[in-house]
Length: 518
Ligand code: XMP
Image (cartoon, rainbow, N blue to C red; front, side, top):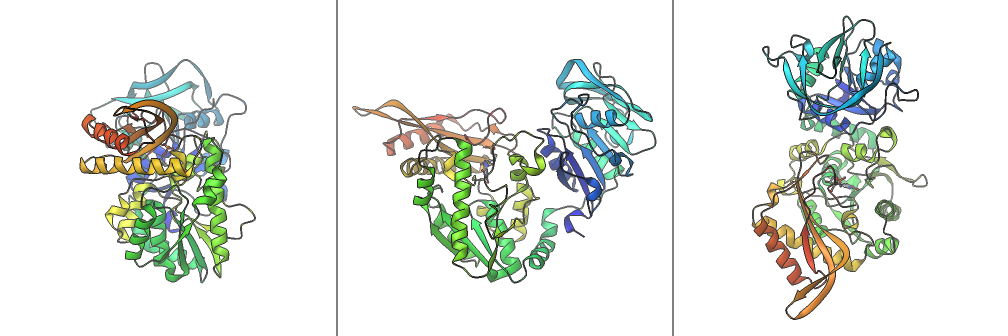
């Protein structure tokens, strides 16, 4: 049996922007879960049946003819099913109830009356019946399907929580996965532990030995080529593979000209310390040529991704018996890219390391961390004895500085940005702020502005500084870095880089912005 799926929750994704949050909450409870697309997944074909199913929300209208549906047999499997928002409406619609557009949608905080002796709301507070919850819906249930009763209601939505009298079927109009819902995690915990009967034993670090064994069996005597990016994910993937197959692993670090200052040297030194030899491939010119004249962010990502693959392919051909390409893809890359399994959600940006390999490529793909979130990857790294300074590094996007130089990328702009970024990191570090933010970096803006240095006019591009605080990088707040720290960074950047006229600080949260500028 798949070591991950001894007990697991299957989350069926109808395209909600909150689906990943459901997965995070379930794993925080200590139970393994996976997200599968409502479009492509057939639960009857799963070789490891889930312990329970959660139907996510989604942007569609359950009452409309072509809205996404779910295999009806899911409701007869005997496994508990919890529908959230659209997921509940879909369940109602398919089981014979009625869903209609609400006269006024409900968005934001709402006071909700919960039937607190119901198993879904038990173990919270026996004396409390009113909770603040997060609503986000334009439709509502007006008639229950046969066999269901109401277990939650608000002033505007009298049917806001439902349960079947005999079958383990439940629905919530509000979003327990969102932190704005009071005791939302407790409600999910009740569903997963008390109703579905799962044990809270899942821990990423606990499956390291199983992962190593599985990798060993899968890879046999084959050699594996791993691309190290300088980030945490590929480094942890590298350590796992090194433990699994030792010298059969060949690590490559492609210097694409889009890495941070001294990054290639630092990564090679760390891996050297861990007993892993890394081959450095200088491909700066190749990347710059491929990116010449390209300004569209998605096109740049695609070009960077393809050029990476070409360089790997060439490197692999020079080695004998390489059959696999390893990548440090993690779960949020898979979900946010919304390719393949998650095509019900809108693609925000395509993370270049997801989406498979070109058909002509003769290497198979191994992605040992594909089902894990960032914090779980870090825990695995700790279990493998990797140093904190590597594991606690801020995330760095696969396309590197390529998505931090707005518009066209050149070797010269990459150099300016590298220096500015390094200054910002050093100033943050000296002020004790680097460890307080989740991610910080500089961005190159290709707009000239006028400045004055001494008696000279300067007409040069702008650098934006960005520092965010985030738990999961799905949402983030601009970090309140003190004015004197920002001002020290601005002074040093403009004084030491003649190619920069001024420095600005980005104060936009995610959403509405994303963390990276492209
Ligand atoms: P956004 O910009 O989507 O970023 O808010 C969320 C997190 O993902 C990182 N990021 C990437 N990581 N390949 C990666 O490996 C990519 O193409 C990519 N784009 C963004 C970003 O740095 C942030 O931590």
